[in-house]
Length: 250
Image 1 (tube, rainbow, N blue to C red):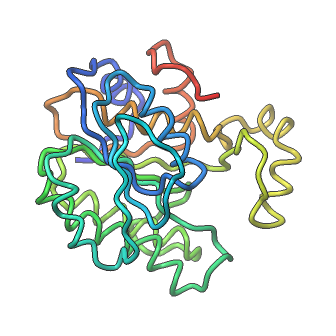
Image 2: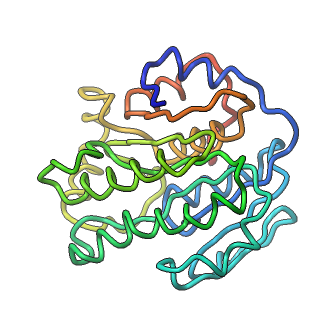
């Protein structure tokens, strides 16, 4: 069942975190994944973080376990590392234009679907938090390749059998910390962000706020099976609501 209204989202967020959770994080070297990692490590509700990625993070922490994995087209070797986990925050992805269309499909859809194939039987009760994107189209009719591939991944995750799936669809993600922007569009958006945020608040989200919401939602305790789509306005409303989600990573 897919729930998209804010009342359902608020109800999910008011459920307390019960006990400490074991969390898997995919894509911790990326912008959103990096904030998710830092927030999870500092979160008292998180017992352990298993980071799955191609390269070392360059940090150490008592909660952190790193698993290096090069071939996301085959996640079978990860089965043991993914066993008995409570949740995953999946942030692996790439920018449109940075790779060929075939590679965009592979990274955006195929990798996520393959990861879910292995993760589901290894941790059948786990919650899944997925970094999708604004305009994601599960029908496959969108003219935008990114939207079709994100939609393809969303559709597969909702059908995979996880008890709770949270699909985050941010619009422009403000990086917060200085970085080299991947293309002209991102450089332009970064430059006009202060004005754009005022004029179109539901089209922007801070990277740290997005990461924090992705972690917090999978840590919430609920016995209700959920497939929840969070558009940019929903993510902002969650972050800005009275429901405490912790502090921003600084």
